[in-house]
Length: 252
Image 1 (cartoon, one colour):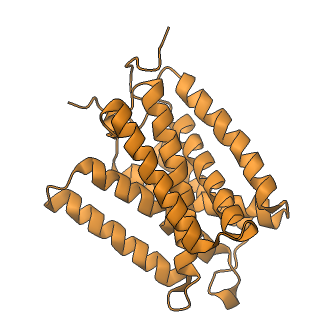
Image 2 (tube, helix red, strand yellow):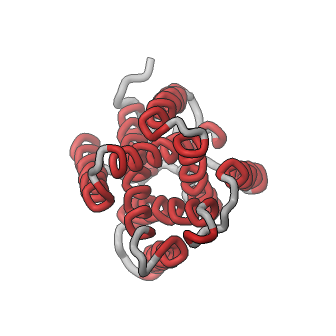
């Protein structure tokens, strides 16, 4: 029987270019699908958060109990974190009145705290070390916080008149390009760069998702949230079929 600290086969994917393409699509889907439930269906942010919380908890439990890496299960869990992140951030920022700046600061603190506790408990936050129920639990909690942070940060920048959705997308895209350059041409820890890139993909997805479905007079493309979500889901499905998805290799 597995214990919380027992090592086993990795159930997170190898980090490749296909990983990042699907991650950006999944974060964008989280924005459009989250808004579709809370806004288009008029269920509200609280009800949307409760719905996606149940889906997130169920997905994580199934993921942790699985005995090997399943790409569809992994990415379904990622999508669950990003849709939940969308509704939590919107509920905190708008319904509770915390505001974008306050929400961003609070969630950034939670991400840092999660990574710090994870490192103090297990001695590493490397993705390649995610091979036990304990490390998986830290991994998914950190991801959920990072997805929520990304929504708040993306909404905050997009709300700035000088940036808007397209300007914010350029900013976050450029920041990701800088992280990629550091990966190839500096000696900065690849683990640090992974988490920086992982966090930055979420606000990029948030503003791209808003760009797709916001009205034309607000700088968007006025797509239906359901149409945008279906298109993004189809892109993810093609990516899962077209490219190989292997479990991360053992850290040395």
